[in-house]
Image (cartoon, rainbow, N blue to C red; front, top):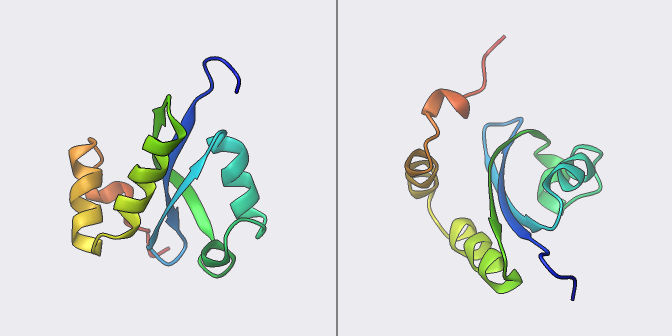
Length: 97
């Protein structure tokens, strides 16, 4: 294993206003993969528009656990999580233009 390698849990905002939580070693590259339709099944249908949140971990297991916890929460709990990370609801509300 590489020294100082980081693992990331991330949250995407999708074009229908839904959230997608994932795991990667490169958030930017993974976001572009999702945008191209080659990411996960979910993001093929619910296209991501932005990265709302990412958190780095030194251990892969910890990042995967964060992803699991996020994915198994209700929408309200996910919003509360994002707010505790300093995000405001306007950051995940899509404009109707």
